[in-house]
Image (cartoon, rainbow, N blue to C red; front, top):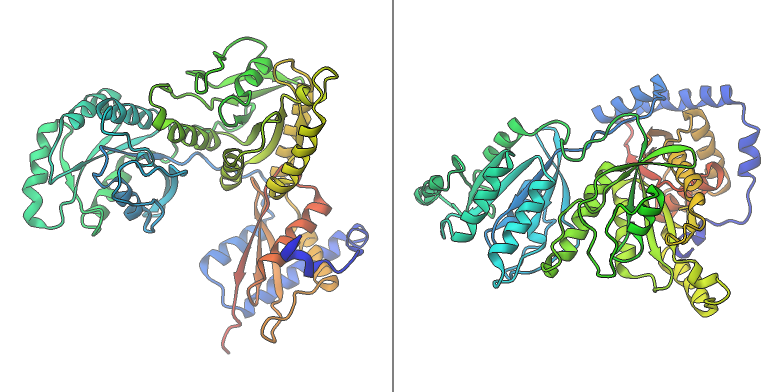
Amino acid sequence: MGADDEYEAGPDHLAARMADIDEQLAEARADALQAALGDYELDEEDAALLAGVQRGADGIEFFPALPVIAIVGRPNVGKSALVNRILGRREAVVEDTPGVTRDRVTYKGEWLDRRFTLVDTGGWEPDAKGIDRSVAAQAEVAIDLCDVVLFVVDAKVGATSTDEHVVKLLRRSGKPVFLVANKVDDARQEPEAAALWNLGLGEPHPVSAIHGRGVADLLDEIMAVLPDVSAVAKNEIGGPRRVAILGRPNVGKSSLLNKAAGEERVVVNDLAGTTRDPVDEVVELGGKLWRLVDTAGIRRRVHLQQGADFYASLRTSTALEKAEVAVVVLDVSQPISEQDVRIIDMVLESGRALVLAFNKWDLLTSPELEDKERRRYLEREIEQDLAHVSWAPRVNMSARTGRHLDKLVPALQTALESWDTRIPTGKFNAFLAELVAEHPHPLRGGKQPRILFGTQAGTRPPTFVLFTTGFLDPGYRRFIQRRLRELYGFEGSPIVVNMRVREKRQR
């Protein structure tokens, strides 16, 4: 519990009180609370949110997949600096040493009110030996997974043979390509950029990623050709629910896919990284159709070992972009690793529903193989490393034999129902009032922040907004989340609780 302990004031009567609530009365009270917000300084966004509350918008919201922009180029041409400039914040790690790998390869960006996903291939810089082949493979991956490519060249160095190698790929791809001539810090260096016309990719765009020169103009031009919805990570409305099967290499993702599809459709080999080229697959499980989103659709070249992590996280983020629920497969015969936790955290960051599949369970339970010690350690690891997702349904299974595979479907259905759940505004405010009455927020500097009004701003995942007179402690926000879960389930779905601290209008 840690930081949340101070909010645990023993048992309360919240559940009983909520069961007795008169829903009409609760709605009337919520309307009064909402009207009282008129005394506070609200902005346009607040007004739009509150207008949505009155409409009682009850449909499922649908977020189309954001268009994807990929940045490719040789090491040290300034790809990460350009990522930071476009995002307007220092997100990507910029270091002078080639080969600084990072976990994240995708970022969310915004320009002129348009949102997009940015793929930074600087997350994996090849070593000098196989540089031609590596940069080409990197570009190929990016091309596969994006709507627009930014090809970055160092204008001071000019085009190298590696650059020319990549140009051939880009021209064949048929995708819109912007040739970015970086490190053009002032007008005197413009002629160096002009020399890049001869690459045959059209007009070079001179920019200085470090100083920001020319980047706004470049983004304006990109927006003119960027689709509103990604053609790569398409989300169809309706149709079978979309499931991503994730996990580190060799935990049994492919075996699970094969068992679910009822055929050997994925090459399964003991060598890590052998899965190649499957596509989305519609399978029938539990009498329903499901679309298993391909998590390995990139032609992974095993000899490019230094790029393996880059590929893995890029694949994971692309799959999540397309999916609604993620099944994270964990191998119970191995300790839970940092990589397992990282994959789970990517799911949380994406806001998708989550199911945990503990694979190879037969190794811990079958009489001839039973490993009591490993089981004991596993429970401890789950308690320690997966405490933050204790709300995710667990399925103990064996993908190889198909044992307990049938338990996966109810878990998926539960998680998706939670992900789509909406709590009426009256009920949510009654919950907040009862909770605060029994467990008030502690005084901070002699003041006690009050919750003025709460509403569920959206589903997928359930997102709540609290209008308050001051900041609520993170521990108190977690406490609200936990009590919401205890009362309303939300099993298998992340919950987001945002705060809007608002001041009283000056009369």
